[in-house]
Length: 278
Image (tube, rainbow, N blue to C red; front, side, top):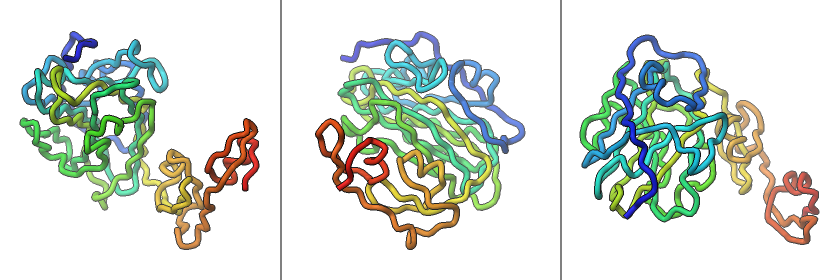
């Protein structure tokens, strides 16, 4: 039986309408209640059975925010007993276009044994906040952009603040729509084998499509992505429009560190660590 903490207040449901945001924005979640009451964000808990709370102001006693003073929290109390959690937190209306990026930080609590899962989904249906009503419904949010710990591995959700970046695709022309976080866990709840507690912080939406190019990853592999997404993965960006075919990505190798240990890393990283690259 899980017995940690319960946040007493239920999240308000607010359907925002109006003009789409075309500019970039950052949200620090220092005042979650104001986002759903007047900030254009929308929340709905479709968990089955319904629990005692939706999204809430993150508990800084469990772990500190990634930045600023607060963060967005959600936990196993989204459902009751043992159930399927499907808890949604939806952005204001955005002017979505291919190449735009949406990034955020997330984590669960240290040494948890209950797996968590988070999806990022997209709707191109204008001001719509239709996320369905059943736990398995997605409504207008049919495009899955990211699925963190889809297999519900006990070690699959980050224990420290980790940044994720998704690039908008499937919206060739600027189209009004929304992006959504979906806390989605089967077998969750206070008596379930899955679901614990996650935080979400420092959401950044880049409204102008970013150019892409070759990104040399720490593994030595190459992928085509934006500069922002490349740097968030610890990669080396080769420039806008650069192809992987000519990226000449460096391969990692043995680095003898000043403390006498040896680690596998890129030569540049080895040099900045005052090591000797072999």
